[in-house]
Length: 383
Ligand SMILES: *Cc1c(COP(=O)(O)O)cnc(C)c1O
Image (cartoon, rainbow, N blue to C red; front, side, top):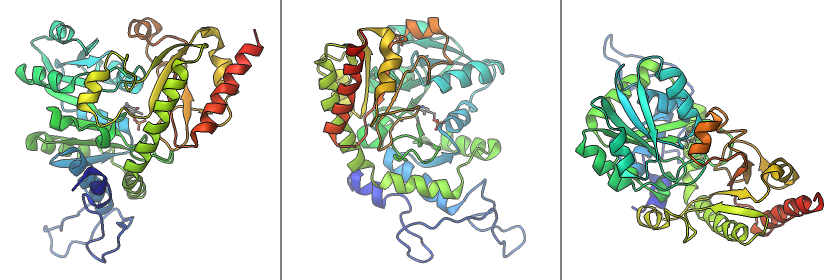
């Protein structure tokens, strides 16, 4: 089966009991046990729920994992994965990981004894330099957020394997439709289902999967013990969203490519970050490891002081956090999604105060271009 077919028919795509082509929302916390001490497949909905299981089997199949796990948010998924580590363990991670991931490590796991080093994970020499006797894992995002840096996942995972490290990849930006990290050598994939997988900005969810049976058992243990599971209603909604991922992603990419080129040619724009541009430093690696360049574009204005005016002048494109929905969303990472990273750290990794991140939606491209053009002209008027 091709991936776009798996999106629709993968995992458990219909109800085994009735044949319903949409898996029902099993809104139940518990299940009748016919014999004492011999529960059936489902016992209690934190440990397992048929609607959630359908989604979990789906993400496992899409990413090539042995088992999938659904959580109440992307961060809850990442929290559970980080629970695999012990006090004293050390992690290496990319220097522009999602702001909430950084906050979770710095404010929650560091006080519990986990340490980490953030490096420019595009450079093997930097990974090498960060390695300690206690390093247990390499945590990567590619394309990264918000600068869309591309990391060679195959090369990094091979390096990690040599040093007995677990490679964890946050695949939120690419989705399994464009990139499959487990096939490139990663051990664990995490997702914010809130973004492209859900696709309609109407739910918060997280997913994880692994192709290692031992890791799967441990993740399952922590999922049940920590308890941050996704409810049946949202599990259903996320599975529904995933069914249209292929058509949405194709439309996102088509628009993003046009917008990226439009921005490159605009005199008010200083810099454009989009892996599909041939002069993007990661273009070739992206072309090798992804089936497309995605729907995220970042850019800097020539006049940094105009950022607020610009984003506030847009009408079709919405000023909001999050990404990956059918509607175009724009945000300023330094003020919004990445505000929890201290300014000095942000600037070292290239997240300037004037950086703008655009999640290109699937609206008609002329409406998006007109909207951007209008916001640019407002800037000119104010001079
Ligand atoms: C949004 C996001 C997260 C966190 O997911 P939530 O669903 O908001 O908890 C993690 N990683 C990336 C890359 C994200 O964009």
